[in-house]
Amino acid sequence: MKMPLYARAGIPEVWLINLVEESFEIFAKPANGRYQEIKKAKRSQSISPKKLPAVKLRAAAILG
Image (cartoon, rainbow, N blue to C red; front, side, top):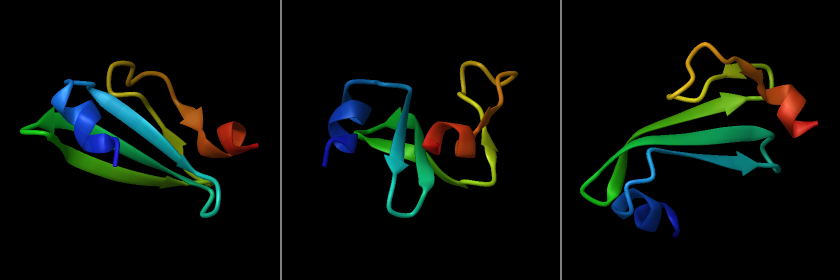
């Protein structure tokens, strides 16, 4: 529901934490009120912010 608002506002990247599935949804590249790139990361994966690609975060460390 909020993702189109964020995309229209030009927020470059949004991370949505799904506690039930223990995963992340990463929305990037806003254009025309939608995010053009959507990736999922599971607990066992590492993720990086688009603006800081050298930074690797383990999803498990964030999920606890």
